[in-house]
Each structure stands twice: as structure tokens, then as C-alpha cells.
Image (spheres, rainbow, N blue to C red):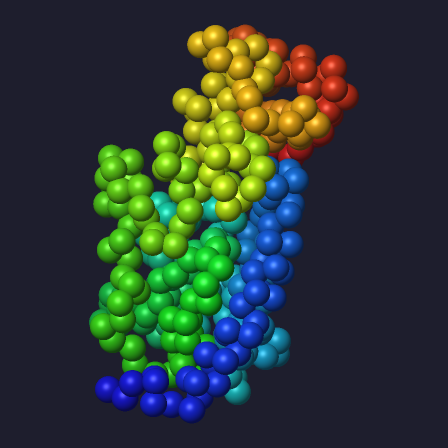
Length: 309
């Protein structure tokens, strides 16, 4: 098999990704502002991130991108020929949980069979995995972090000029790096060599209610989400208590007073999504009653209660 290193097209791709990766990352972070602001973002945010990746980094034209063909989120075509199906999930829904990834792949594979497409990809704006559909199964093509500040050069294999080429034996492209079970997930905290995890909680920055500096784990406080972005029902009330009362006698330190209202809104929206606040539960726990009272006092309760369920 011809090495991509021998191709002038590949060398041009390397120049492009080195020159434009910073621009892509800046746009990706802007796409995720609503997640920081409101505690969640819709699949549309991921679709926008993928469109930026395709057009800024991977050489695809806007005209190559098609939406909602059948049930497919994004379908890439070239001269009318279907090349790649991308199944987009809300930001943080996949990274890095095995079960969520497998469910998304099953969905993408069904759509690929319907559309007769040989290549599928899944992404949540944090990670991306692509594979060839071969004999009813999947053969790895790309697996990378979209959060990494280092250009992910393996993305060549889904670029406009790389997607047509057969890809085998790529280091780091296999989904085998994902944990095999929830227990394994707890033990195998280093899910990505490039992912920055908190040394104690083994979680990325997005799982904390307050992050002073995303590159400095000592400024991350109040873990309240699991690694897949779902609410952590064990840690959430502890995070709430650390602000509105105390947790086992400990009060939160390191979170600026000016940031507390937004942190409480973030925690409140997560609690509301679980039906934990007093307006949604007649038996709300004291921590959530105190949370609602604090939000009301700060004039921010409506920011939580008016959030769509």
C-alpha cells in the first residue's frame, strides 16, 4: 500500500492543517460557548463544528455537505457520489464512553446500509471516529480528539483527497483505547494521551462547575458531570452543598465570588434536568431546596426554571 507520505496531496494537507488548526480550534470553542453559558448544547453545535472541520481543515467544499438525507445528520458527496456519513451527537455525549460510541456507530451503520455508503463517522465535537464498512463490520480509519491543541494529522483519511484511499494499520486509530465497562472506565482514566484530566477526579475540565484556567487543573472546582457529559448524581449534591451550606464541614475555596451566580445556575440547570428542584419534586433534598433559595435571592432562579426540560 502506498504511503501517504509519498503523496504531494498529503504534504499539502499537512501544510494546511498546521496553518489552520488554531483557527479551527478557536471556532470550535466559540461553537461551544452556549454549553458553557447554559450547561448544554444541542446536536446542531456539533454539526457546525464538523462543518468547520470539513471546510477549514479537510478540503471539502460547502456544496459537498448535505443535511438530513433520510435520517443522516451530515452526508458528504463529491459530484453526486456519496462518500461519508457523519452521525453527530450533542457536545460531550460520546467522549469517551464505550456504550454511547457503540450506539452511535450502530445508528450510523444502519444509515450507511440504507444509503449504500462505505464510510461512516461519529462525533460529539470533542472526539471523532471514522471507519470503513467492510463485510458487515467496521474497519478503523480515524480516532482522534478534536480538543487537542496539536493538529490531528490522521484526519487526512477523511479529507477530500484521503477518503478514497485504503487505510490499514494506523497507530491510535482503534476504538480499543476506550474502556470496556464502567468499572474499567474508572480504572482506565487515561482515555487519551492528549486529554487533560484532573489528577484526583480523572475528569476533563468540562465536568467541573467552575474552571478558572482550562490548562491548569488546580483551578478546576466542583465536579458535577460524568466523563460522558451526563449528570453525576453522586457528585452533584456535594457540589451544591459546597456552596450553599457545606459538604462534611468543607466550604468551597478558589471560586471567585463573582463567579458563584453562574456556577449555581449551571448546577441548578443540571438539578432541574433530573427533577431535583422543589418546583419539580415534593420531596426535594435540603441541598436542592437551599440551591433554589440561593438562586431566588440572586435573581437567577428564572434562568434555571425557564430552561426547557
